[in-house]
Amino acid sequence: EVQLVESGGGLVKPGGSLRLSCAASGFTFSNYTMNWVRQAPGRGLEWVSSISSTSTYIYYADSLKGRFTISRDNAKNSLYLQMDSLRAEDTAVYYCARDLATMIIVIDDAFDIWGQGTVVTVSS
Amino acid sequence: QSVLTQPPSVSEAPGQRVTISCTGSSSNIGAGYDVHWYQQLPGTAPKLLIYGNFIRPSGVPDRFSGSKSGTSASLAITGLQAEDEADYYCQSFDSRLSGSVVFGGGTKLTVL
Image 1: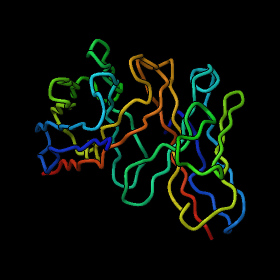
Image 2: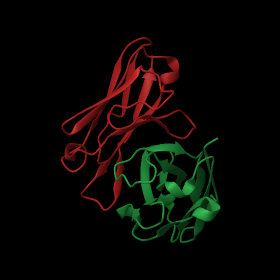
Image 3: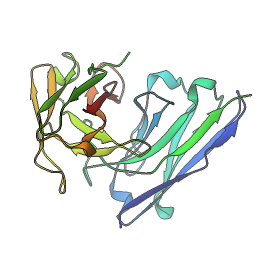
Image 4: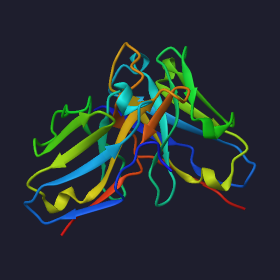
């Protein structure tokens, strides 16, 4: 079964850090661009970051202003999101999602597989 | 404020047809980038409903259809069922922003 499972969420104080993980299974992880998308309570979806299959291309939402770092370990079938200098407005469910296309980079690709999400709460 | 504009809510009776619009600009939908649609049931992760403007993934009923014209796209749902009650999001790419995937603000569909 194709599956993505996020972990690492929790309660953190403003200014703190957190590292999210996403474990992939059931498909050849190293063939796909991967993404992080977040959803604040009661709000819509917000794209956070994308990383190509070999980590050559990495993109972030402008609003993050360098506070987040995406990475992956293809040997471990895992995607990561290092979040630093966290703010209250970063409180959200964080989803990892897989690009639909395999073996190529499609800048306007759809996300066909999503994890169940991990909750990040930034509060003092 | 989202780069792609969707109506906050729509409602219709069971068995009827409803459409959800997604309005963009010349830097995203109007530039030729594909539009995709997601369904998010309460408390669950988004599910891909339509990709490449009008293509349904395997398992998605043909009651769901997508279209695109100019700087806008639409999702149509026919034969509305109670289980269609969910939030729907459009997604595309915007060339003004570095590597930027963009989502619409979402539309809450209520089946009366």
